Length: 379
Image 1 (cartoon, one colour):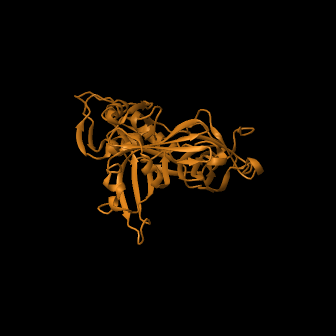
Image 2 (tube, rainbow, N blue to C red):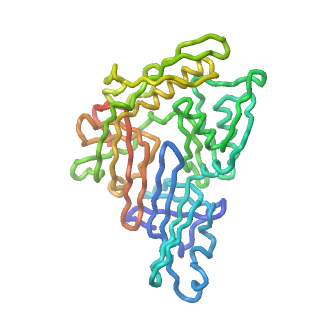
Image 3 (cartoon, rainbow, N blue to C red):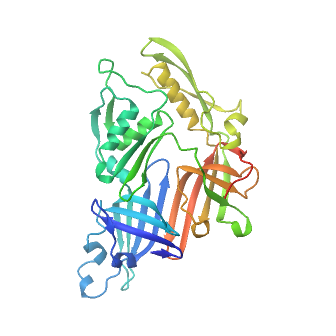
């Protein structure tokens, strides 16, 4: 599928995806892909599914061919000016056929999720003897080499590696659910990103990526440089929390105080709300038990840092004017929206909507307050 100077490539097949035949590409009407820093990413392909001629009388050719069968693999790549970028590596989970009332007017909607859905099929009871959370994450990701998963795991500041005599950590649920549950203890995230190579995926378990070079700037109301079609901002003064409490330390057999400290995340705004709104920041009581004091402090800190994003920007981007693939789970600069709103943001979610001659990206950006930390947002 061609979009002016932009090309969309579709690969599909059981486990190993291969280039889609011309008949499938000709029937493809539109594509939607949503990526997020929490939860699985998803995709939807809409095909025209009319029947014509004797070959289609028995069944719709799109269904009869088996190319779009459930649990087949789908790989989508977008090429901006000669630079291919992976957009989705996923698995088909749902099919919805709507027959047309007249010949050639039916449609087939193919819905799926990124390959991490395969980590959510089997609930298991597993003992992880003498392993800390980062090691468990590496082991669980390693079970899915069939889908090209390469682990990228960051160890939290405080790890829990009990001996078999002390206790044995136990997983009760799917591998994906356990990875997300462990990540939430430290304010971490887990997600799968397609690439860097074809058929490979990076399985990331660690803190949200809020450093490094930002993506090309989003431009608002800047005449010929404008690429944002619409945007709105929302500030939530009730979002930030601090966490306090007391816990019985299982190693020292003493009661210790638990209290979160100032956020260690790099500030994306000049005036973070969790600082500016003191002393009105909400207080949450720490309620977990069976931990050491160090583990309790790490989890309290993780919960507090996960709450710091109090400003949300939602909008729509003209991808053809932008000339790039805006990706979730990283930074982007925003300019032209006023001194309070310009600056760096964390890209929380992006929805790509693609059809011939049109490519838009709906986005959700977050940060911790108002004002820019930069003198100017680079393009």
